[in-house]
Amino acid sequence: MKILAFAASNSRKSINRVLVQYAASRLQSRFLPSAEVEFLDLNDYEMPIYSVDRENADGIHPLARAFFAKIGGADALIVSFAEYNGFVTAAWKNIHDWMSRIDMRVWQDKPVVLLAATPGPRAGANVLGTQELTAPFFGMDIKDKHGVGKWGEAWDGERLIREEDVLRIDEALGALSIKGQKMS
Figure (spheres, helix red, strand yellow):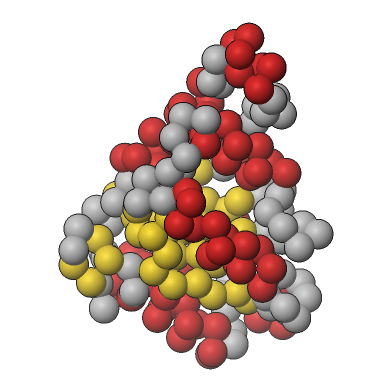
C-alpha cells in the first residue's frame, strides 16, 4: 500500500505537519504496518501564482504535474489542512489551482482522511467544512475527518494527549478503504 501524506501548509513549523506525521505513524503501527508512506512538503512544489495568462504562455507548470502524479500513484491520502483566515493556505490553493487545470478531479477519486490542527477551539471547522463541501467537484473520496483544536493543550511535544483526539484519529484512519478493503 502506498499512502501519500502531507500538510496543506508551507510553514516549516506547521502543527499540521506534526499532526499528519503523527497520524501516518499511527496508521502504520495500528492498521497497515507494511504501508509505504510518502510525505510531501509543499515547499518543494512552489510555483508562480496560477493565472490563465501564465498557463496560455507556458502551459501547466511541471511541479503541478508532479504533484498530480503523486496523488495518482497513491492508494490513499492523509492530509492535514492549516486554516488561514477560515480557508486553506495560499500555498495549497495555488497548487490545487494549477492541478485543477490538468483535471478537475484533482484527488482522482482516492480515499482521503482529512485532518486539521489549530491553536484555537474550532479545530479547523471552516477549512474541513469547505473541503467536504467541494469534495465531489474535485474527486475527493472523504472517508473521515477530524480537527484537533487548542493544539497547545492537545500535544505534549511527542504525542496527542487528549484521549478523544487519539480515538477519533484512529477511527478516521480505520475508515480508510483501500482497494475495496476496510482496514479496521
